[in-house]
Image (cartoon, rainbow, N blue to C red; front, side, top):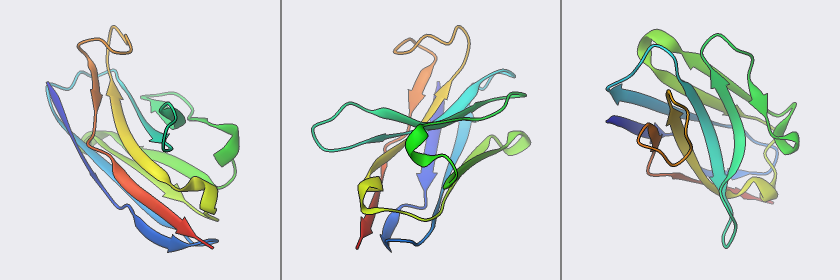
Length: 121
């Protein structure tokens, strides 16, 4: 099992910034992917950005140039720096931890509890 602890959500005015953090603990393997997803009311959860150890990050088109994902691998910590926030970024943001065999929904697919990000105009 892997436990994920998220922090950093909140309320911010459009154009502002927030930084989300996620700390993973438990049975962590040397290779894994950590990422951020978000969910709008009534919608499926969608990828915001993710990053496999040793690889370049992947971003959703809607956040490219505004959001930056980073990892501190020795501390098993993931960050998401969100700049130039827009009201349409308002959602619940979830940290995800996926390790081999990298099967979505499988026994090595873990989710945080979610943190609300609200951007007002």
